[in-house]
Length: 494
Image (cartoon, rainbow, N blue to C red; front, side, top):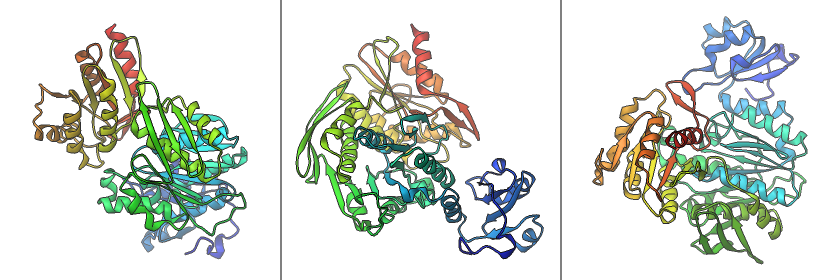
């Protein structure tokens, strides 16, 4: 059934709100029965009715169940498309009146989104932001505590409406592979698509790397050269010439491509890169000019993130001075290369690195900045991509002097088995547990063990959690913050 082909008996029902969680249904509400990863939303139809739902929509039910329902039930073939379409309609299609910028990739999405937002604000534009770490609407910012990088379509459209009502003109949205595959960003009418990189991640969900890449490509398929919002927007696909994603995504682009690079010929390039422990300086060669960038973000990978943001801004005619000003104002991103200082004689860094590529890049960045030993505390999430576990163990073994393998989010998996699978990757390259690394499931104890090993001049990286405010054990979210735990342990040692 199409989005507007309602049965005649319910055409006049007034809907007060939409919910896909039965606990959020209110009187006069429409309940969208979305299948989850652990349970089917159709199991909660009775609860939705009790809470006041007047109509429900979902994928087909057996006739027996359908006839016993005490409310109209609209059957659709794809409930996630239906949810996105309903959300767009309910909130008045806000993306049609905004310049919407989608950022995808395996690593660097949150940082790049924040950099784009900072540049646009430096140019005097009102921006909105939705990322793994934070939300922002016209200068008002708060943390993303949902543990979802891309929210469900209902919340995405709600936030876009809030942005529009707050006079935002440019919305920057982190578009994950899950968000793209599950139709969460359907109806965002993206004008600009940006990619950071595509490496190994989320194979638990996508099953193959080809499927994962195909999901990322959806963002660029959504860019429509014929779309005209009347806002003076220049549709563009922003691609990374240094990454394998360039050749993968290029065939899907129907709008002009603007590429960026550190190592390859590209429209926009970074040269003369100067890295140190506190900041990064580099020149940017634009098609018609050049500029000097100084940022407090450190590491070569952050030069690439800056280039993605610079190229996005350039595509929309942002002047070079505003680009440089915006990047200079970014002090740091929550849980990304965040330094924890309680007066200890060694460095403690918290970073969200939870993929093989990001772990490798962060360790490579910290190595030349470390006078002593480089250590890392990390894990790998339960019920997620198991193929990356031994890879991460090998990377830690090859790039760190000592490491502690611990919980990330074990969920309902056996914690010991996860640690063993990571450890196997280290053992294959000759490392031995007890001598070169430890396996300690309890993350607090793991951090304490690493600190106990530390000497003056060492660097300890706490990887995988970053900004996150919880750790998932079983199906419970337990309050957690690597930064808080690190500070508490450092104070205890003083």
